Length: 274
Ligand SMILES: *[C@@H]1O[C@H](CO)[C@@H](O)[C@H](O)[C@H]1NC(C)=O
Ligand SMILES: *[C@@H]1O[C@H](CO)[C@@H](O)[C@H](O)[C@H]1NC(C)=O
Ligand SMILES: *[C@@H]1O[C@H](CO)[C@@H](O)[C@H](O)[C@H]1NC(C)=O
Ligand SMILES: *[C@@H]1O[C@H](CO)[C@@H](O)[C@H](O)[C@H]1NC(C)=O
Image (cartoon, rainbow, N blue to C red):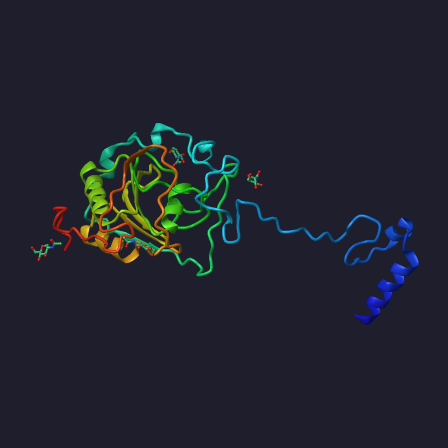
């Protein structure tokens, strides 16, 4: 160490002011090379309005250069009607009592912070039904959509929402029953079709880190899933979303804005939830 400092001082003293000899020095200059190009640049950490220590890009702020929930939406969805229209044989998607519901838990590292990406970047997922991951800074207004891309609803999940997905060819009675359960259980919900679901389980509930895939609605399991896993996202935030493209119905308050009481209306909904 001492030898290094002595050598450095020697180099500085003997070569000072002569660029030619300075360039012959191949060691590391500290803090930087005198009178020349900085070989060890210290890049200052830039904090712009859109930067956020946790996610990279601040959330919930409309910004035309990053995400304003209006421009460049085709990055996530080409707006094809096939994503919300049944083009397959509906019989393949009929409810089947022999196909058991599947509850998958993803072990999300406790210190995982989901990054935010602007609309100039694509976001891809390894899973067909992701339960966590990178997402857009602006999230969906709570409610039912003609179609909402996953890059949006993943952000709702992070705030404790329940997302319901159904295949466009799924049995309409089953879809309506599951919608009714979700809408009667909590305000913080998203409902959207998703044509990438498998025919054997075309009905899905998701929370941050959990998914429940069903062939037919298991009422008690669906209610238990919502009661156990809703409002448990890593970010407790009640604020509504900003994205409302193809929103059909805004969510209604069930117990209160914080969903303090999940699935309180077992009787009023006309569904036997026991
Ligand atoms: C995308 O846009 C953001 C904000 O304008 C910028 O910080 C980022 O570097 C851009 N990314 C690419 C891949 O161009
Ligand atoms: C829309 O459907 C097509 C065809 O199945 C599929 O490739 C695409 O990933 C879907 N888009 C979204 C956003 O789900
Ligand atoms: C909802 O939660 C927020 C934050 O904890 C709290 O300030 C607010 O009073 C709550 N509102 C209701 C209606 O419970
Ligand atoms: C639901 O019905 C049961 C039995 O009829 C009753 O005891 C209970 O109070 C009712 N709950 C609500 C929220 O109305």
